[in-house]
Amino acid sequence: MSVLIFLDQSEGHIKKNSFEAASYGAKVAEILNTDAEGIVLGNVEDDLAALGVYGLKKIHSFKNEELNTLDAQVFAIVIAEAVERIGANVIIFSNNISGKAIAPRLSAKLKAGLVSGAVALPNTENGFVVKKSVFSGKAFANVQIKSERKIISINPNSYKIIKVEGTAEVIEPNITVPGSKIKVTAVNKIAGEVPLSEAELVISGGRGLKGGENWHLVTDLAKALGAATACSRAVADAHWRPHHEHVGQTGLAIAPNLYFAVGISGAIQHLAGVNRSKTIVVINKDPEAPFFKAANYGIVGDAFEIMPKITEAVKKLKGG
Ligand SMILES: Cc1cc2nc3c(=O)[nH]c(=O)nc-3n(C[C@H](O)[C@H](O)[C@H](O)COP(=O)(O)OP(=O)(O)OC[C@H]3O[C@@H](n4cnc5c(N)ncnc54)[C@H](O)[C@@H]3O)c2cc1C
Image 1: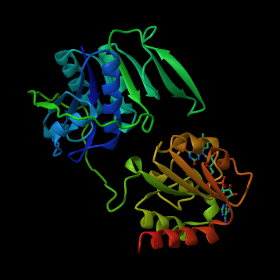
Image 2: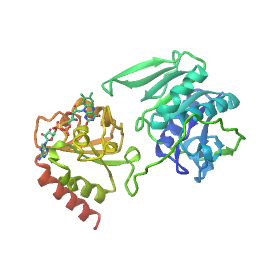
Image 3: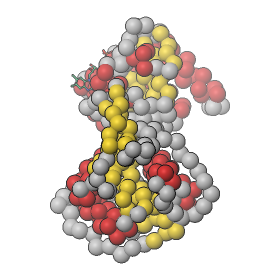
Image 4: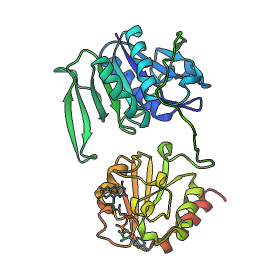
């Protein structure tokens, strides 16, 4: 009985969140005195054997072009079959868009208890208890999984990526991909930008920027840093920025290394989508703005004066 980690991929490359899930899964396997194995769906160009550095002993690579893009219903069927074949009893996902879509379906199929949004390793001293974040990060719950099979989806940026020595054995099992109930008719990709959900650095603007015409304050710094851009819902509702940039409770939940918020008040619904960021920097002219309570660094002042200076300083530092 092993620990199986779902390795999410996009356009043939394993996503960074999966390295974290793999490191977490390898540690779970160590706790349970078993092996960690990975599962990849779709055609991947990356060297899968090299993923052994994340503690994986084997990678089950289900190569099939019909699995190149996420279809949660189909993925859940394929993974359920693989779990039976491999004999895994703990299945780990990153709690990203794919994990959120697949893990609950797999849980229903396998009748396996699921803890989504885990933030720590399971405590196995008395059962199998997993700590998870609840109420948009405002509290934690310790949840016991009692079923024989267990599924955990780990919140991005909750566990460090650990590298060890070793290569994984890559197995390419045969597979019949079940027919999909959905048909993708169009894919609209945002070209030339850092995808927000994967970004390590995010510069985000709020209503304090007064209008879409002032967005160069955000995009100039983003360009200088190689960061993605985001915004508050108020900004997207006002059509200053597209809705795919809106972060928060009703938007995208992100966990970058740096979240740089400019002219955003820090309403609880906004914080719900960004409070897992490693470092939060806030610029706001109101010293009482709630965002300062969640910030690691804060600047009280006018964004229109401060942002050009920071962008200039970054450009200078980078020699541009
Ligand atoms: C059910 C529900 C779901 C929601 N979901 C989301 C969500 O997912 N994401 C989200 O963002 N919001 C969400 N909201 C809205 C949320 O409550 C806030 O209204 C919104 O986040 C406010 O956006 P803001 O901070 O840009 O604007 P404001 O609240 O207007 O804040 C603007 C800030 O800019 C500062 N400022 C003004 N001028 C300057 C300047 N020159 N320099 C520096 N600072 C300046 C001000 O001091 C102020 O703090 C939701 C609300 C509800 C009810």
